[in-house]
Image 1 (cartoon, helix red, strand yellow):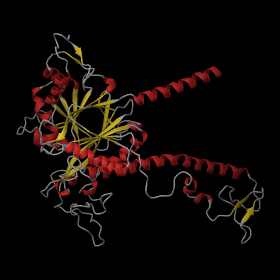
Image 2 (tube, one colour; image 1 turned 30 degrees about the vertical axis):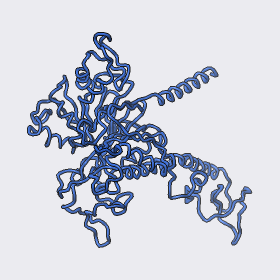
Image 3 (cartoon, helix red, strand yellow; image 1 turned 90 degrees about the vertical axis):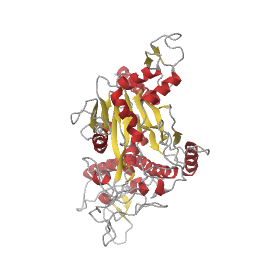
Image 4 (cartoon, one colour; image 1 turned 180 degrees about the horizontal axis):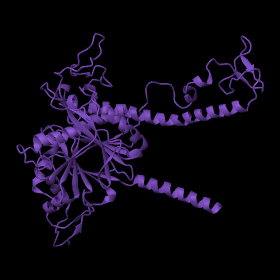
Length: 523
């Protein structure tokens, strides 16, 4: 028996050690094909994501947006393939460096090898929203590189609808989809916003498998509003199953939904009491839908959160970022969420009325403070769980003690550290029980004792949560930077400098990385 216990303990220790080692090993790789938001058309939003353990197997890579695609892959391979392939260097050859290190190539031509990546390694394209700088590379490549199975576009129903109506419609581009008598080179996957509750279990509940070793969950976010007042799509007409339109709710940070600089006017008719009326005005502005994807390696539990274009909640007509932060908070608290890819199109010189549904360093900091508060709230709640458990144990002990203590004189009051039988005489500060117990009299019965009585040693009473270093260990990767193309400081450098200045004051603890073309990031 002693030998078996020793073996069980050794097995547990080895399991813990393996879990720790797995946590330290990279689980996800993100390759930056395009880091900008224009105006240079060769550098617009596009990423490749893959689980490291899968190697470079068929369908193992998932694309997140594809403003650029094949040309960017070609450029990376041109810069990283060794010279003399096929002559001085034998083929096939396994690349030793660069974002595609470990991948076996069979041609001396970077173009040919890039086409292999697109044809066979990338099956699924996650699209955040259907603006041209996020889809043009994919659209152009669909007919030129047909494989043996259709490419899959996955996104919110509004995104898929835009592709069907405005792209693959035999006007802008041939209908290459497998719907409406199309060519069948593209198939659509409509994702349930917030994840389907019928899919997955535990921490992976709601995550849809999109490759052998990757799962995703998508949330809708807002990306500005149309100048025209209509409702062709967006938050005012996107009441999809599983989605919630919070456009009728005030901003979580700005009570009236406006900004401190020049926020938008309210678009709701107010009742006599000053509250928004139940029916929204028909002439209200249409809000563009965008998306945020949680991409997860289900084995390690490692995740990245990747936003499309997004605006701050504090000036949005339909603030939805808070829901994403609340989903992310427990994953950051547990260490599962390693990085957030989020746009920062402009530096702080851009005024609110010229943001067009984008972020600046001041608003990224504002949003990260909200996230930090949610993370701290999750961690604080976790710390309270032992006290809640202890309270239940105390209640059970009290019940057992009450059953075992003899009663007399019809007095059935409980004996516990914080409760006592009623006083037998007026003005008596304490009462002695039949068993010799003495405790101070309090007016609150045991059943009505607040949990705060058990929490005072754990959490100081405060309405403001301390968020210093709450996001330590989290990487915040800046994407979609719009360069100014002048002789001044590069926009990416200005944005990073401003973010670091805000971080000195906020002390959130996260690391900022401004992405660039050809970059490889592992988490």
